[in-house]
Image (cartoon, rainbow, N blue to C red):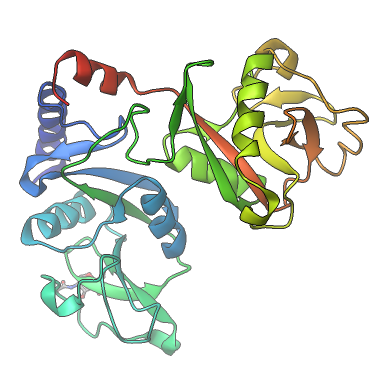
Amino acid sequence: MSIKIFLTLFVIFSSKSILESKEYRYDYRYISDIDGWIKIHLFPAKWQDARLRCQLEGAVLASPETPALALILKSMAAERFPCGLYTGVHATFSPGDYFSVEGTPIARMPIEWAPNEPDNHEGKEECIILQGNGTAADVVCTDLYPYVCYRRSPVTLNECGSVDPEYHYDSRTGSCYKFHDVGKSWSRAFMACASEGAYLAIINSNVEANALSGLYGKYPDYQISGKVKHAAHIGFLSWGDIGTWTTIHGQSIKAAGYSKFAKGQPDSPDVTPCGGMFRNGELDDFSCQATGPFICEKTPDSLYENAIRLNHL
Ligand SMILES: *[C@@H]1O[C@H](CO)[C@@H](O)[C@H](O)[C@H]1NC(C)=O
């Protein structure tokens, strides 16, 4: 299938899909042949990051699990990624034992190896790519390749337009939030929120600060893993220069509507230039590297509201 036909099919399927309430996320496209959604990640990543990002998106790193999926992945490799794209097939648990991330053994998948593959070169190749000519090869999992995430039908979206039940709507602010109690660095926290179709929370008012403080209060210290527990990463930072506290959406925190630092804070913005929030909702300059809890924010998806209006859910 040529890429033009392929893209045309995408457009047809995606426009049709809204009527059928076949939406998953704005960045995923429904394909009826595989009764599921896919997203092409053009930005090459290491295999583990590719796997994780798909997982955070509520999907899986796509493998040629079925003939239909294999066809799509192969045509994509042929048309767009002649150097190869990652599949979800790996042997990272035990050398030589290849499974898809969904647990399907490789012998059950329509995979054709390139000549002399898999060769497990120097004993370091545990991840499988599909190459432009449709053949598979094993590569080092830290090599960078584009990849495809796949989400099988059906999905049930909650009031936040998410498949993740941990996103809850707050009527006081009109936003949805998820508190992550597994600590991450600010950058990894940013990635987790982005992959969930959300963003690191931005506080726009005292009301929102209170709402987030209340959410934080539901997670006592012992329930939070990571180095820091008394402050959470949120969506602002000292962007570009010391003390220029700016939201990740580019506004000064003052202009965004909430800039209440805790007493004595910020106390060392030159070494801790990321944005944090204490349990009481007041702001803190927080180390970007420190693994701390974080809060993601998501606007309720308009697609969900459309679906309700059309009685499709
Ligand atoms: C497919 O491409 C790979 C990588 O370029 C190459 O090594 C292999 O020989 C090709 N296989 C066939 C059957 O053409």
